[in-house]
Image (cartoon, rainbow, N blue to C red; front, side, top):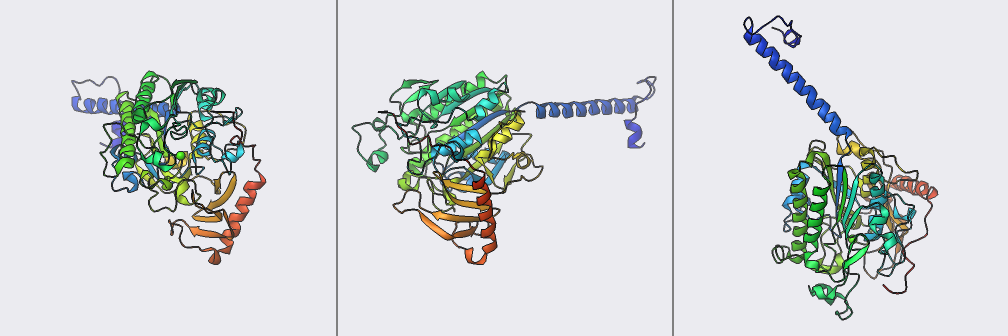
Length: 487
Ligand SMILES: [Ca+2]
C-alpha cells in the first residue's frame, strides 16, 4: 500500500471486524496527524505569546572570567550549562566602558551620548549626583509594562539615586537593590585608598539598600548581597509566573570591594575574585532552576552579560579579559567586549554565535518579541532575532566605541580603527592617532599589529561611517556633572 493511500480518509462503514489491522493503523495515523497539528498550533501560539524576559547583568565581569569563555580556575557550571543549551556570543559588546553609560544603553537601546548619561571627566554618576536617566527616555521596562508585563529589578541601578530617578520612576513595578556601586560610600573611618578595598572588611562600606524608593538598610552586609538578590529574584519569578514578566537582575559584583557569602568564601582556586564569580554562577543556577521548576523555561528568554570589562587596576581583585587587550574604562576590546549568553529552550538552538551583537540590541529585539511599538527616536541597537533564531544575519553598519562623551574608536566588519587611545585607569593622557591605528579583530584579537599603512581604503570607509554617525547625532546635555550639596 502506498503511503498516500494510508493517509486518505476512509469510509465510516469500515469496522474493526473486517479490517482490524488497517483500521488500527489508520486510527493511529489520524491520531498522529492530529497530534502533529496540535504541536504546530501550540508552537505557533507559543511564538505569538510574548515571552518572559530575564536579563542578568554582572558588574565588571571580564570576557575571560567564565568557564565557557575559557577561564581555567573559576568554576561556572551553571553559566556553562546556559551557554551549552543556548547561544554563546564571542563578539558581544557593552555600549560603554564603565557602569552608568553602559546601563543607560542597556535600558534604552541607545548610545549614552544621546541622553546625556556620559561625561569625559566624571565617567559615572557619583553618590552626590543630581542627575539621572532623563524622564523622556523610554526604558525597556516602560515598553514592556505597556504590553502588560510585570516588571521587576533587583540589584545595582546606577542611573540616578534620588527618588525621582530610581527604577520605579522608569517602569519597574518592583525594585530592591543598591542605587549605585558598592564602593561609592566608604565609611568615614575606613582606611584611604586601595588598602580599604583589599581589607575584606564590610564595616568599611556604606552603600545602602533600597526597596521601591526607600532606603531600608543603611549599612547592609555585602557578604549576603548576592544571596539576597537571588532570593528576591526567585520570589519575583514565582509571584509573576502567570503573566509575562520582565526581570532585570543587576549584580553588584564582581565590582570591588569583593564579598562572598560563607558558602563560597575561600573556596575558589581563583581566590576571592573566583569566590565572588562562583557565587554569581550559583545565583544564575537558582534562577534557571526556578524557571524549570515553574515550567517557564520554554516561555522565557534569559540573557546574561556584563556592563564592562574587568577592572584591571585592582590587581588580583580584578578579573580577566582573556586574550583581549586592556579592561574596564578603555575602548580597547577588553573594556567593552563582554560575555554574552542567550537562552530560550525550544527557540534558541545550542550554538556559538560569531557575529557581533551589543547590549543595545536587546531593546529592539525584545520589543519585537513582545509586540511592542518602538518609540519614535533614534535607536542604535538592531533586532538580532535573525541571529538568535538562526534565520539570517542582521543589518548593522558600524559599532562606535565611546569613552565618556568622546568617540575613541569604530568597528566596521572585522576592522577596528582607534582615533584616540588611552589606558582605562592609567596616568596617561588621551593620545590622538592620525592616521588611526587599524586592527583586524579576526586575525589579531589582542589588537597588537597596526595595519593602517596597508589598508588606507578600510580607514576611509570607517571614517565615512563615523562622519555619517556624527552628522545624525544630537548629543544631549550631560546628567553626570551637577551635584547636590551632600550625599
Ligand atoms: Ca561596571
